[in-house]
Picture 1: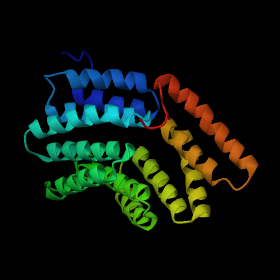
Picture 2: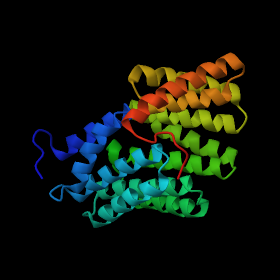
Picture 3: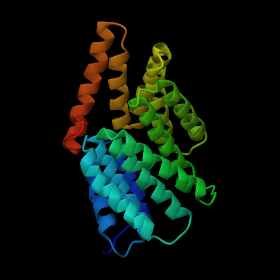
Picture 4: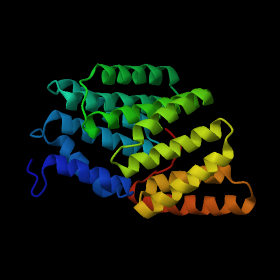
Length: 259
């Protein structure tokens, strides 16, 4: 398969950026093309399958995402040894953990998450964000979510604080936004609702400016839950619903209950 303009790595980065803006249809077309290209190295193909899986999770399709994340893990195992292989293997395992979490399989999710953490601990240290900080940050996100789903709010807050530390100097505005949103959710979980509301409001504002529509949508959903009066609740729900409609045009089923 021939990429007429962009090399495979540029195709991947473009697709990730498009999905962050909620432009899922265009992103998915690039990712499917990349994942199917046997002339592209296994590391990039694995990353493409992981990205496709994340789209499915955002639409509530955790069981469907298992297929893409499983394929990503197989591609990562087949890749030559190196820092890139470690990163995509950890990404795939983290994705599988998130998929299992979404289906209610806490035990399976926990085992996969522990395996992802072991892969990162055993990997060669690297200063490259995408091969070092990024997979560690994603694993910290899912660990915090795993604690929340398990009813361990205090432990979730500890994991979220670790994620915030990892994200402090990261080059990706989207990763910083998502981390702040996770921190807000964990603060709500431990009863710090005022701090959670302040953080979520900041995330919604920044996400709007940066056109990070999925994160803006999620922030307004959290703000609707945290509202202190009916007017604020109605306003937050209105923003959440409007953004949801926009995103569903690009990703059918966006925001649907997990399947």
